[in-house]
Image (cartoon, rainbow, N blue to C red; front, side, top):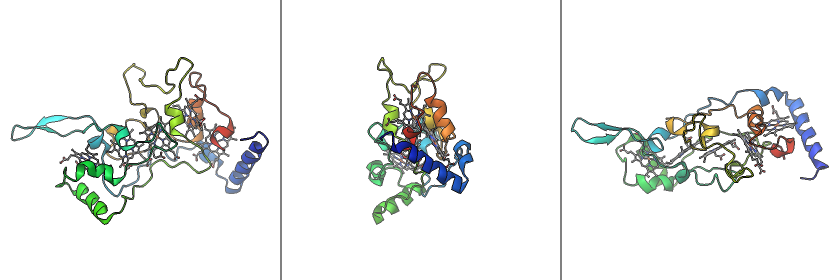
Length: 207
Ligand code: HEC
Ligand code: HEC
Ligand code: HEC
Ligand code: HEC
Ligand code: HEC
């Protein structure tokens, strides 16, 4: 990124916007709430949520809640790279070659596996290509004292999952939906917080 080329890029971006007339989009909430239908009804509540024990009619304890699988078991990359990555079907089959074989959606998943096809998950979050975003830069960001910049607690001081800062409580969603605006204003609102000391230069996100 040298200083002379940078303005040219931003001007090009502005011209492209002028041509398509979509600047308002940078401030719109068009993404929030987006929850596309997935090829398999994969429920984060069931896989990543907290367990809820109930006694069934036979007097046995059954978990009708979640199995508490850690986010990083399936989304392996967020501390290491730009993308968080979705799990391959092999990860699901670690358990599902033996578990849940009486469940409709598990059987459907096995059909993809047997055909050797990846599950065609539909992207939920999908920023335009002219925006640069990097998970690892966010999750590893530390202040001068070496403490992580992104909060690991809520306003009441209770521990939260760091992903929650942007994605909300995914483990409580049957179907993942975009929980925040994910527009330029939203990114900048956090970058401008004094404790974040994150850059607001155009080239940070448009490079
Ligand atoms: C058992 C594996 C598994 C676990 C555990 C898991 N996920 Fe997922 N996650 C998936 C799969 C599969 C998808 C794609 C299907 C979907 O969007 O529902 C997904 C989708 C997502 C998406 C949307 C991706 C996109 O397209 O934009 C987010 C965000 C996400 N997960 C966050 C989390 C967080 C946060 C946790 C921990 C609280 C978590 N996941 C735990 C498997 C998992
Ligand atoms: C660590 C083990 C484990 C992994 C990994 C795992 N699951 Fe599961 N899954 C379970 C268990 C246990 C159940 C509950 C089975 C039951 O109720 O009979 C389950 C249930 C399900 C169900 C049925 C939910 C319902 O209640 O209708 C679906 C669909 C599912 N899993 C999809 C997936 C997908 C897709 C992946 C990979 C992204 C995955 N699972 C990874 C253990 C796992
Ligand atoms: C600072 C905000 C922020 C935090 C914190 C965050 N994400 Fe994301 N996440 C994003 C953005 C922005 C995107 C969309 C990236 C794109 O479209 O290029 C995204 C996309 C994703 C996706 C879709 C695949 C991808 O990488 O594009 C998954 C899965 C995901 N995040 C999981 C997680 C998990 C798991 C955590 C916690 C370990 C997490 N995220 C923490 C902002 C965040
Ligand atoms: C919850 C707060 C928060 C949100 C929301 C957020 N960021 Fe950040 N961002 C940070 C922090 C903290 C840093 C690291 C600052 C440092 O330590 O240099 C950062 C750094 C960055 C960097 C620099 C990464 C690098 O490689 O140097 C980029 C690019 C970036 N953010 C893009 C985005 C985009 C795009 C969005 C919105 C889609 C966004 N951020 C939303 C807090 C946030
Ligand atoms: C922290 C990250 C971040 C910074 C810093 C940033 N932007 Fe953006 N910008 C975004 C995101 C995210 C979008 C995508 C908005 C959308 O599609 O909803 C965007 C979109 C845009 C668009 C296109 C709007 C459209 O409707 O297509 C323009 C033009 C733009 N930014 C210019 C700038 C300029 C000029 C600066 C410096 C003054 C700047 N941006 C700084 C994150 C950033």
